[in-house]
Amino acid sequence: MTGTGKDTSVVIVGAGVAGLALGTFLLRKGVDCVVLEKHSRAYVERRQRAGALDAGGVRVLNEWGVGEAVEGHSRADSDSDSGVPMLVDGVQRWWRMGDDGESGDGVFCPQQVLVRNLIRIFLRDGGDLRFGAKDVSLRDIGTEQPLVRYREPDGSTRTVTCDFVAGADGYRGVSRTAVPEDVLTCSRHEFGYAWLTVMAEVPADPLALLAVHARGFAAQITRGPNASRLYLQCPLSDTVEQWPDERVWSELEARFGAPVERRGAITSKQIVPLRGVVFSPMSHGRLHLLGDAAHLISPMSAEGMSLASTTPTSSPARSSGRYRRMTRACSPTTPTPVSTTRGSARRPRSVSPRQCMTPAIPPTKESSASRSPARNWRPCWSH
Image (cartoon, rainbow, N blue to C red; front, side, top):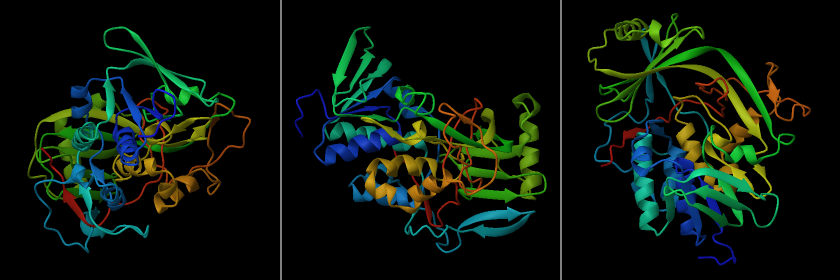
């Protein structure tokens, strides 16, 4: 490992996909790091989030020798050239992968499975992962010796000195707040509608099914061998109470144009207003933001978890089509009005609706580029 005369070279705040991927990549380059996670290991390993990793994300994991993180027991027997089925007013078509230069298979892999596997690999490689790190604060990020302070589960306070801090603690994390208010800008695009997102205890067959209908968008996407995420476009004014279980299933049938033969218990529902938000700059001093701390995207575009797994590669990620789309999302390509907060004296930037679809339960979640799922997909149900 590199020796810097400090406690560690890099402190990574957050043990989600972005933080764990970065930590694993650093270890494999001989760079020591410490990962701080405020939640318990049990909580992190069962936390439901995304469910797909595109071909680019799989490629990056394979290049770093951690492809095992998305290896499952079974593979989908699907037509590799067809894509993902999409129903347009009940007529089946196919949604194919865009021309982003990626080839190979994507995987349907619940995020908690990927996180569990990345934790196992990181610890196996000798990584320093500290769960239950509460009240994290960043200091002196504009100097050559930033430090991170946190509280241990036993109540004692620890301070870690380092060369760099990686903020991978999500939208609600503390890392981004270390960027001065007169430096950080937030640009957003409001889409004017919401999605009802539903977790149901029923397998998805096919693994992903999308629908475009006069009544609105709908989808059923796998979240494991016995679970699905359902999406229904709805007005911003809707509430969860307006969507009893029977209405969810009947509306899904109406937009699919066919009966939903397999139903299961619904375990959660949320109304998710869609908006695109990108923060800039994503680096300040010795602090670098990645994953949801810098941007969020549509909850079903197969891009969020893929960005989280690939942006830690820094320069390679920045040269990829994925990062270029993220950059374009902050460029003035559309005349759609955006609101800018924190550093509002800076020129507002517009966010492309096609590239920046973002969910937000509080009205301020953020985003990045959205596109169709990769055309070759296999399930990943790791143990």
